[in-house]
Amino acid sequence: MKSGNNVPDEIRILTFCIADTCFGADMEEIGGMLPGDRAADREYEIFFFHEKISFAGKHITYRAPMILLLNDSERRRGICVDQPADMNIVIPIDSIRPLPPLITSLSSSFPLWGVTEVNKQTVLLIDIFKLMDYGR
Amino acid sequence: MTKDTEKRKSDRILEKIRNRKEKNKSTEAEEEKNELVIFRLAEDYYAFFGSDINEILPYESVTFVPGCPEYITGIINVRGDIESVLDLHRLMGLSPAEPTKQSRIIIGSKGEIRSGILVDSVEDVISVSMSSVKRPIATLDKRIKDFSIGGETIYEEKYVSILDIEKIFEKMQE
Image (cartoon, rainbow over all chains, first blue to last red; front, side, top):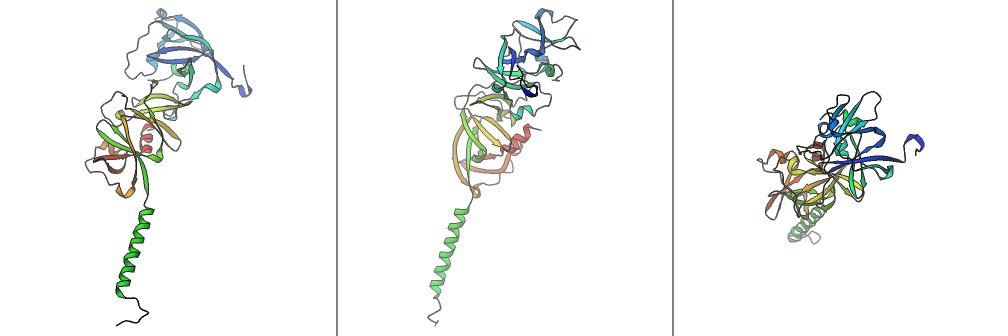
């Protein structure tokens, strides 16, 4: 569903939680999924989510790890997250709020870009492509 | 002694006294008054200018945002607007403190920047004249001095350092 200027009216996201924080990734960025035990697979360049962005010293555990493969025609790479909670959740663009300026001003390449609510829970929207290139 | 048209010395003195009193009165009326929001961090009292404060909220669960410096506790949703929450304990290098029932989130703004600021409690909102704001003691902790307006006042026999919300926001953007 597209409107003028190529900005969609809604996006479909996949949600997952890490260290009690819920994240949402645009389904268009995800080309597939692999079970977590394939993390050592040399066919793909794979990172754990917390290796790419700092959780301020929190201890991170993945109860049911799953690898999200990027929809990237140039490189075969993926990011390991905890078991996705939901897929294909439709989020109207109007319901997305930007992150506060004190957070967005931290870095122009900051991979978190918005906030929405799913089932009364705050979900941080993350650009997985930016995350893969983000330095801790 | 004097002509009738000339005022008597006593009258002139009285007139001068009255004039002085009137002048004092108008000076008092013109003296700038400011509201201060007084809050506590650990055992010490601090204040922000009321004009920089939008509202004071009870502590609520803060959503952690990874990738932020440790003095950004996370975000909260205030009637649909997402606000960052700063931890002054960490920003000012004080020992970290767990939020309690008395904890409050002060929503402050300066220019384009708006954010929540987590404090241990809000004690009072008072009105003070700027003449009662004194220069801080020379030995004031540098960590506080960095965020101070360079003045302090007294509240319930305790020194209150007045902090500059703009300096806090500037520090965050360094």
